[in-house]
Length: 228
Image (cartoon, rainbow, N blue to C red; front, top):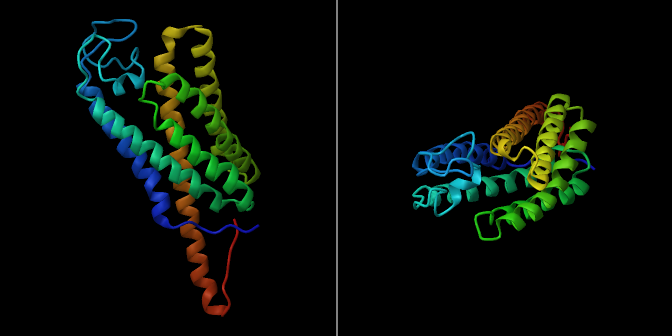
């Protein structure tokens, strides 16, 4: 089945959302009072020992009120909302658009809708349920990247998958738990960069397809549709 190219705005939103999330989280980290599971009275946010979820807590690990909590929560909403748009837009660049729309598009949107509540009292449950749902569009995207020979992005995705599995393994087993906050940040940055690069490539493909359509239209009176 041939795919239709999504509007440019749908591809810009994920890029803008990721960049805005990173900026807001860096600012929120500056307001974090201090403390971690390793050093309760450490001053400020420890990029090695603090979890990224520590920034959304109303109170820091040292017991003080966290003034950056609202900002980091808003950043989370922006991130997961923009990722919902990404998963919904991505199937338009694959041939099996109808099948991928269900597996990647809708499942991805549901997963992001669940994860947006990660700052509630059901944090652990949200992580497990949202993580399980996210695995569906993630693995389906890897499959499509392999089929369409986006080799570098496919390999990068496999690296992200290994990192994600390592996170869950450490979290569940408690093995080398002291390394988890640092590994978690590497995983998050890697995953967001992967999404960013896929989305950016989609923008380039869209631009190329629109350029081809402009060249084809003067020679054909009928409606043209190109597939990737």
